Length: 186
Image (cartoon, rainbow, N blue to C red; front, side, top):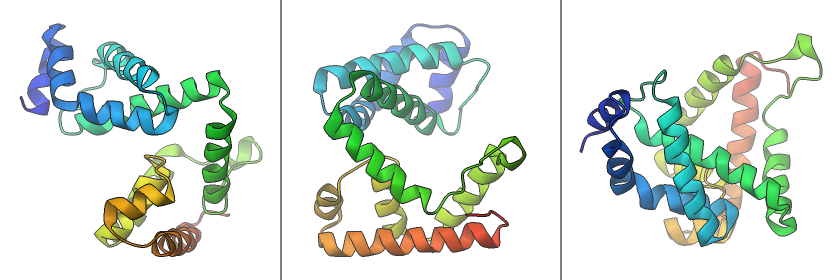
């Protein structure tokens, strides 16, 4: 079933929307959640919570052309919240490590006057990602969106871990430069 048809089911409050969503995206959402929480049962709970959140968020949102991205964002937030709740030291340390890497590239406001408009920053990030070659963009997203380990990314793309680390390092530098050109203070 096409994404726009599934969204129509949500808009019509038809409960088959959830089963259609599960059939089409369930495995990918579970995999995303599992990559963050590291526990299959909790990943399944995150997937199910995603369906409930989607049910409550559609309407007013109507993600007809980007349903998976909409669901993945929900799953990611639910999974990160579960991870924080469980206070899993190893996983928390990993998330802190990734956060520290990105802090060097993305500005963070110190006070109310310095707050960055989220929409403008999102557009800037999308602009940066669209400039990257496909392999670099995929490596960047696997690391900072899906929270994959360097080893997993290396296996997925058939490249050395050294190449993954170098690519990520260079992409962070390019992102920093790009955001500075766009007027963001790092």
